[in-house]
Length: 245
Length: 223
Image (spheres, rainbow over the protein chains, first blue to last red):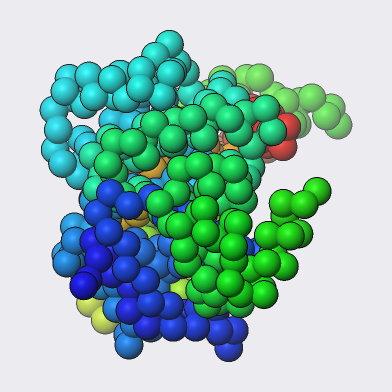
């Protein structure tokens, strides 16, 4: 059965480097999937292909809610449905926090200004930043900026949220506040694909954990299985390296 | 011989002042018109060079390289003295403005390109991920951020354009320099030339100082 996000034979080359070696993956609606693995294993590349920030070869196929992720009209449709949160936040520095959130609804959906403003304020309240709407991103801490970035992604009311190492650029004391927001989101039924090094988060929140290495999916299982009884030796080695310290 | 009498003769300056003011007015008109037209041309060239289909990109690139290489004086003389042979007869003002704009546009295009390329890749990616199309990405996200980066080099280029307007005196346009040389001939005294030089300085020196200040602020990352 095809999933809400369906990835078939995903191949990705950077020049001659084979970054993704034929990934097949079906993700159900409302599922929370965490992707773990060593750096350079292709996990970021994988989720960047889902909204085609990375182009991929033509014999690969990705669909989101049945819509093929190919350039043109259908890609615009996919991107309006798929929100993304980046490692480095990528907030727009010349816009206030509120304007950051309002921009896409206003431009892409044509939402009237007053309505977009109301939406932005509701979302800011939801990520615990009601008072910060008039500030510029540079006036916020890293954790606050990442929560604004999540609010900005939510403003398009996406069916899918992609998280590309959302806590990797944060000071340790700010990781928790971002993970809390993500934990709340996971309960709302939105489909989430999270590339992360936070094994605790993956264990608690994920419906399924995917371990990648060398551009391939090595093992995919519910977290209780993957963390306590991994089948593959490579998974065991990785978990041993990241957990037993 | 009295140096003051020769080079700073107030009597001569007072008599020729109206000529100089007339010339200054024309110089400023030519300069400002060419700067504005060059900005528009430069933005179009830059966006074509970065985002158009490949053949157009190559053509723009060739244009930019050629017009940054050709001496302005040569271009001006070609426009004013050579084009009439193929039936294109332009006034001195239009010839000068065309030459200045064609060259300024090429430099401006490179300045804009540097400004756009200075915006981090993540800004393009965040815009794309939100579903903004290319035009929205440029107008709402990229260009507003580029503006801050390009203001010092654009000011610099504008200074150059104003300075280069003096070349228009070669095609007999009565700009500040031309008026000054004529006043000198009329009065048999070089004071009007010194006056013209002082007027150029009065306009351009503050602009040069402004650019250095902007650049220092940029380098401190305070913009």
